[in-house]
Length: 342
Image (cartoon, rainbow, N blue to C red; front, side):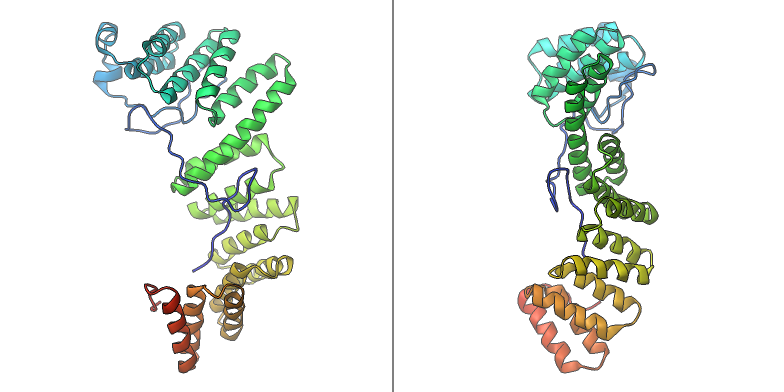
């Protein structure tokens, strides 16, 4: 049992992001969709496409025009754009937008898709206009700002491009955090890596991506990200705490202890750092030191049932039965449902 830390965004520390689920047109297969092979812009995570034969691949144009709903028109437009027929794709997107059948969210997605097709046909003014409409309907979508920034940058409008890049970095960070909450670690790492390309000096982003790598099981990459975070801010106990957790999981107990020591030095009131250092001491059979750290964790948080339980188990193993019973009783008083076995 190790206490986890690292839910952070560019504007907030220790933020547990509410799970952000992008509403989708149809549910089947999540993919990052390259709008066309020649396009320099990428529509990432925008749609969940159902490549059903009757819907897309085998649909004749006549059938598409006769029976399609507005959502179907967007899907057909995406498939048409993927094949490089952007003028035709624009007609499908326009039909969907003009239908009045779409929700505000789906309308924003249609504007975003049409903007990419306008860009691919060289109509940058219309692309910028559609990105502007999409941003009003999907203000948290980082792909809109990133793609629009590329056009603005190419036009020499550095101030506007930089503003959009900052919004894109924030959006990728928020979406990456949400993917972590949803246990989608590959997607989280992809978005956080994009955010870091736009904000390479963000210590918080390195900590957050490190957490995603750790939860994915890529412990060396997690350690590397935490080390970079420490380089950017050597006085942040959170970075040392997280790196200690990765080192502990990779069984580098001595190095983990050094990081927990540093976290506690920087923040002597860091109760979870004492708890995790106690866990590290347990792994190297320094049981008395582990008991002392659990005791410190309890003093900082008297309602920490798990610390009472862990200390009780150690005391039981050390033959201190009466003290162990008191710890187990305290744990149960705080949390009646806590299991007292290993």
